Image 1: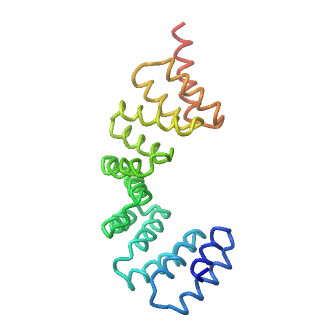
Image 2 (image 1 turned 120 degrees about the vertical axis):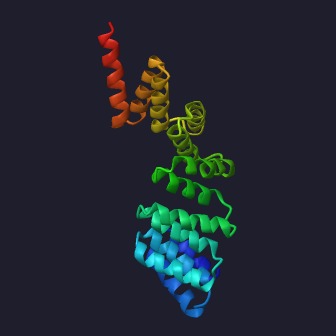
Image 3 (image 1 turned 60 degrees about the vertical axis):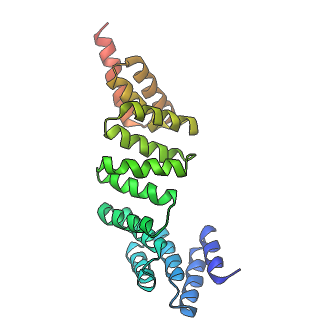
Length: 221
């Protein structure tokens, strides 16, 4: 096993000190190879040491201006610090350089979504569902973007898809409840809010929705 591969294996096993030692050795032996800086950046990102991770990714981009995974790493560094505009720039750079993977589209879409650029988020999240159609969270975030752009019929279909992939997805039930309430389907909304609370009893939004419906029904008796 190569030294770099051993370091990655240590990371997977949670042996972070051992991984750092191996990556340090790899950089000392091959100081002009960007992959070693990227791997060390990934380790530091995992450890939430964002400042140092950023420096290692930037060093990789200095050594190789087309190191797509380094720009993806930088995007994650900025995303984790809620710097969504910088995150988008770097994720987009990774895509431009050929990192055509579901995770890149997903993180680019999330960066737009969290920065309330909902329409911009849609094509990236849609592409992520095409590349990773079995991930419930990818579908859920796509559903949120649809809902935020008032495409409620499409959003409903996507949230139903989420439940097909993950039956006990409380937030999918909550959002289906909101859509049902918007469509004045009170009993369906109540059923979704109730199910969300069965799955996650501390779901405050579902509890509020359920209480409001029950109060409204009681007032109409």
